[in-house]
Length: 394
Image 1 (cartoon, rainbow, N blue to C red):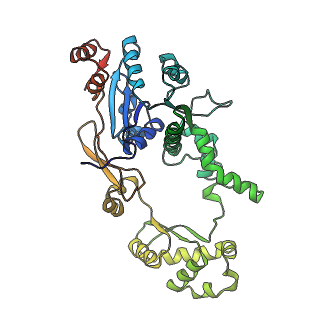
Image 2 (cartoon, one colour):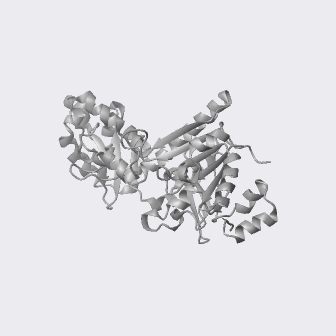
Image 3 (cartoon, rainbow, N blue to C red):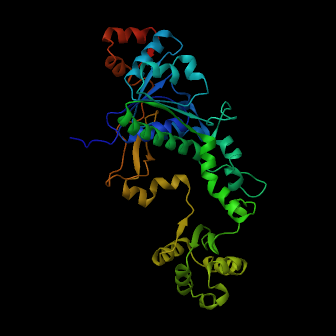
């Protein structure tokens, strides 16, 4: 018999697309919740995205069930209302007011279902901006992250959908907190997560830095490093490697191992603040030293010494990363075209257990018949709903 999952018995109905909403559902689904994805008859439009959006649907929709209904029809909406009544949680990340127009807003649902936990994932929480459309990109620009990522005068978004993904994670955290609270009170509640506030949370360390130092915060590429050696270096074979030396002990180990005895003995370099001040002197020496080594030589040396280091890796390299492969950090999925690939699993362990694919990526309406039968519709009624275009089944 399979081991029970932490969220087994929790049913989630999600009305989501793109990244933030699906990420929330993914976290809950991987942990064992039954997550039912409600799609329009032609499917979540994220399925059809290309270019930089091609990875969205495959990455964030495993372990979910798909049902598809015509929500413009009363019959379709009535079916979905029955489905919601069977659920513990509803999630949505559509434009403000869209769920209310369908009759699926929290105020309408809580009257008949006071124990429902309802989560909206939006661009902004309550305030002057709350009715604006939100994107990860806009959050990064107005939340200070793009300013901190690019050089001065060249704001640059981070290289992943960080606010979308973390916004989904914080939504899942809020939902789980609401589930725990419901166990005590018997009442559900309305919870929200948002891109802009998530970005502000990410940038909080820089806000505090500016307050503590009394100086304008400098973007990451142009700022003075917190340590003298904390940078990327080019090796003799043309590769790039990051190396950090971040404690006095590491400084001693580094200098002794690489024969930099003069630097180690220099009293002007005894403390980290002194070494940071002397960075213009230290960096050329270290850069020239590493430029004589190959990437494998430098990586092996740093690993043997216990120094922080990292090769500069491209996303496609992660499929063959020895740590991810050995630790089972990737899980199998089948793309809509039938091709099999792998995606990273949740970056957590519980008692040594990792959470993998149980349900492959669903086809549009793959579980429509199952859900309708579970709601009490007869086989004849199910087929009629499908034939009439109210529902779609894969």
